[in-house]
Image (cartoon, rainbow, N blue to C red; front, side, top):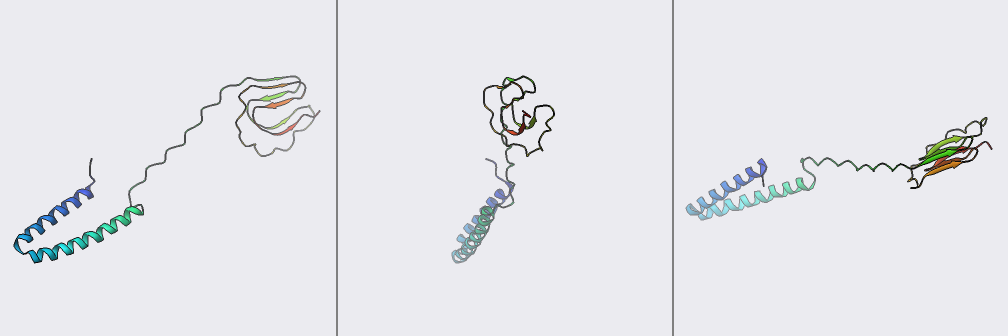
Length: 142
């Protein structure tokens, strides 16, 4: 485990403090007691401040969010349209019109994406319309 520079500095300061207190304990026990009281109170306040900084997020960078997994492409389905003006689509159809002279209706908002059926899509017969997904607007003109 590798410690950060601030952790090494904190360990060094603690080591020096312990050495000083032990040295004073052999010379003057009363003075060592007073120094230990002040050092302990100071360490408690510093620890409280560091805990508050760590709790609020501090300045350490947060890890980058992972991108969402993309869905695998849908397998190919057979799409077949047969007959005059037949329309078939494997997915969604926004606007479709068959029947020749009939003007297509005004475009509507794109349909919401849905999961298309797993089978194929077939439109057969005159003016038929089929889609594997949603159909926003359709006009057969029939």
